[in-house]
Image (cartoon, rainbow, N blue to C red; front, side, top):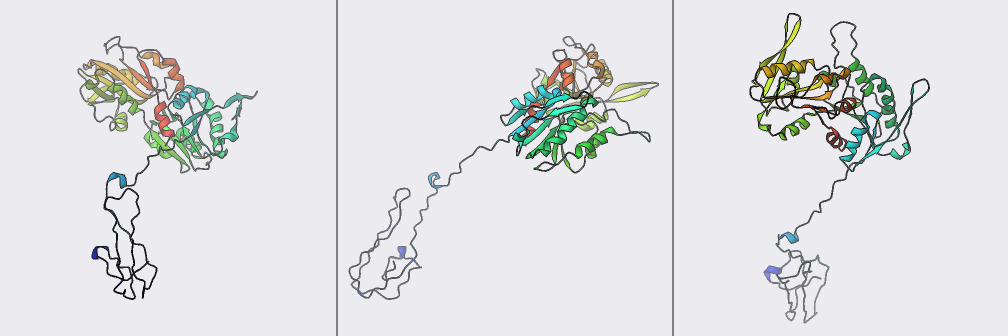
Length: 398
């Protein structure tokens, strides 16, 4: 209510309108709010009128009083809420079952789902996805292993089928991209099978969430990443963080030197391992033989770790071991992300038997990207498996 009269200057509201003056007999008493008001109290003005002659009453906006109080109890409080965990249904093939179990153990948001793998009488795949309708609207991933050409077709059949089941998104985890590791495109007529496989994966059907995400670890030829088309989203991960963590756990972690068997390995990995002293080796031809020599760096008195992306026959690693031992390395170990070892070539690598680098390796670290190799070398010194499970689980939660 608006009343005409004289207010103290400290309580006058410029929005108040008084069209007619009060008679002299009118008395207005203003009761100001106490500065010791309780929390959430309402401020008010009380008027006592002794005469109502010649009054005009009009609506008026409320009078507001503001407390200049910035104490924490008056500030807005933002409640922290836990971020939602992405729920993923993880399918797997027979070769990756153990790795899939480790991945699921890393996160409550990953649920294992099985597939029935059978064959018809003529040898062609007879595959069944149980309870397929239950994955509609869910995030789905498949953990593949193309360890042999004989299993690629049946796994591709599943890879092409899953996105069509009305799923929210699809991720293909292929830790080891197998083709192209030995190919040399030198003569007209050479066929790039790595390109063929990349194009096949690039045409995986699109799910409800868009193109398929493809996770690959330490692809062998860096140019192969450009083989993939626009309908797939390749995510190139590395096993090197696992190696760095393991090196920090060694008693002689302050005496580690990294050796690269060739310039290609140096180009690939030196930025991830730039905090370590490095040695670069090179292959030189002497007559009909290819000999490994030290191009730069000094291994004397150091625990030298040879790093590469993969190993097959192991000939280059063994030659590196010999030259590093000859130049005074105290210990020699090796790391590869992909231990392929065809024809059980892993048997060529023995233990140094307590610090004799001429006789063998102190450690030979591999990841579980090639499951058949893991089963062969498990519990055989100097081999030690660094699991990709934690890294895969983290990637699936992106």
